[in-house]
Length: 257
View (cartoon, rainbow, N blue to C red):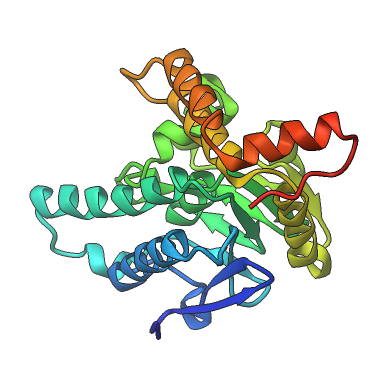
């Protein structure tokens, strides 16, 4: 499939999605958000894809924010519709049963920070900068930023950064748990691939259950313990469970489907 604002490749079962609007610092316009949703759905449906790495083109920006030019003249109802469309796409990333890693190669501001936070794991280049600066425009984050930033760094820090519009540099993002690793820019994609391949050693069915159970912990109205019980039980009906147990008893490495 051909996209206007994305570059995609699949290698060794890893689907790499590159947001490609370098002249706009990879800012998210409506078309780009829609294309990201389509690409994620495509990767989820492809049995040959194990995991997804999401990054931006160039070295300056992962996604520098939303395309503000599209905000001009919107009514409150149109603003709500825009936020809902973005949240729907970002929820599809968060709930993807396959691991999704954000390789943050520069500015991740506004919608870019929200996009990175929707991924399961975040690796940042040393020059990466995060932030939710929407209050500068008389707005608030609309693609899930108030929720996911709070889940990742706690209420106090989330309040501080969304109210002050201050940026978060990579070392601070690491210290507060917003990112998992910080690496030199030229090692970013290699580290993301290395981490994805370390995930790939184990059962994809079990890992889908882990993702569903962890996400349930963060979903209002959902009992995460019940979700864990259900996902745990489902594992017993998979070939991967049989292989994992047999491999353990036979003292060999498992070969998962």
